[in-house]
Image 1 (cartoon, rainbow, N blue to C red):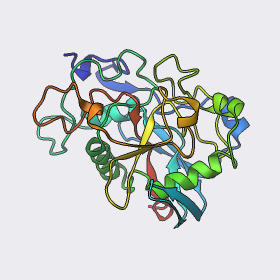
Image 2: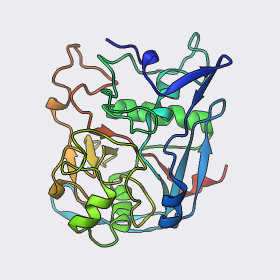
Image 3: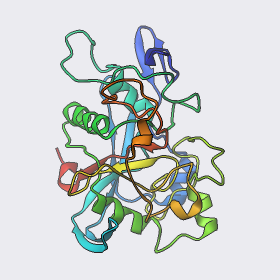
Image 4: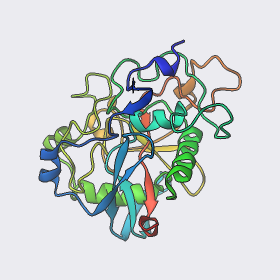
Length: 277
């Protein structure tokens, strides 16, 4: 088992932890995307930052398998990129404060390297359970003073409809998404494909993203690097299956990690009213 503290993605300079920017976006890509209005959030005591994009109010069509339904969605913010290891490490490793005496519940060490050696700095966090994603959001909310959370399925669907610009042909999907046909069986830097019509990166593909549902069903949206083209995009939906954690030897299974789901990650959301402190 490789302790997380030995993984890449952070370094010590004069006794201080220095981390790269979470979800850093190349300047040229930002200009091409004409980013929607939003804001940038920094984590005190680190060099980690991330961006949120405002999504206008509107309706969303949500299809859970029981038939589509139309939902009114108030304005909200969504992460420009998927949550990266840079940001998640601050939570998981307790880099924001001394571990001793810290009352925050933080992830236990996983079996093996959680990034599988595919990449750490600037890469999407993966293999995290819904409970871990919720705990991460609670920590981030307490740290920043903003009520961060996972997107609702309706919010994600609203963003996906705008991001896809009304539809994705094969060429456009290949340009904005890491999927089975171009990902070489692994995750990639969160800003290494083109932005979508909303100025987001990897909303489709790379890692599938946890959302919340009315029934608390464990659902991811968007598809991932391992999925074929017809299972990546605004309609891609998966419900957690026991095979996602089949090789975890613990009883009960880990609260924090999905040993067999490197295709599952996190994107942040925030109600529009939370923009102002």
